[in-house]
Image (tube, rainbow, N blue to C red; front, side, top):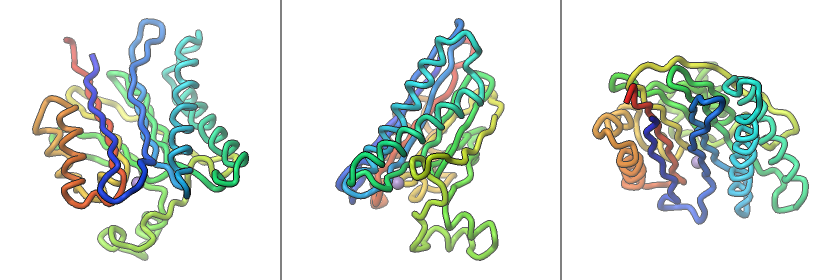
Length: 250
Ligand code: MN
C-alpha cells in the first residue's frame, strides 16, 4: 500500500494560494501506481491560481484516461503527453481573457510504482528523494538564479537572497510548446518521495526537511509539521508539500 501526506497552505503573507497539488492512486491492468504533482502558479489578479489548477486538472484527466487504455500507461511518454496537454490548456486559456494573459505555472509530476519514479518537470518546484535520512534534490530549478549558479556568476548562498530569485526560465502555459525535463529514478524500500513548492524549501534546509520526515512514520503528520515549520519562519509564500512512501509487502 502507499502512504501519503499532503498539505497546501496560504502562508503568512499572501492574499491567495496559487499552489495546487495532486496525489492519487490509479490502477491499470491490476497494477497500482501513484500520481503525484505540484504546481505553483504565477500571474496577477489570481491568474496564477487558475494556471496551477488548470495544469493539474488537465494532467490528471489525461493520466486517468490513459489508465484505462490497453497500452501500458506507466511510461515516461504517457507522463510527457499529460504535461504537454497541461501546457496547452493553460496556454489556450491565457488567450481567452485579458486577466489571464501571461499566466503560467510550475509543474512537477511523478508516476510512482514500487520500483521506480517517472518524472516530468518544468519550473522551480522541486522533487526530493529522502533516503537513509538524507534529502536529495532530483529536479533542477528552471530559474534565472540557478542558471547563474551554473555559469559561476552567483554562489548558491547568493542565489538564496538574490532579488530576482523568483524569475523562471521555463514555465507551463507561457508558450504553445514547452521543454520538459523527463527522467526515471529507481526506488528502494523505505524511500520517501517529496514534492514541494518554493515556499517550503526556501525556508527549510534539505536536512531539516529530511529530519521532519524521519521523525515520524505518519507522512500526514510530517507534511503538517513541515508546513508549520515554514510558517514559523515567516511563511512569505504559499507552502505546499506532497509526501509518499510505499509500504513494502504488507
Ligand atoms: Mn511559490
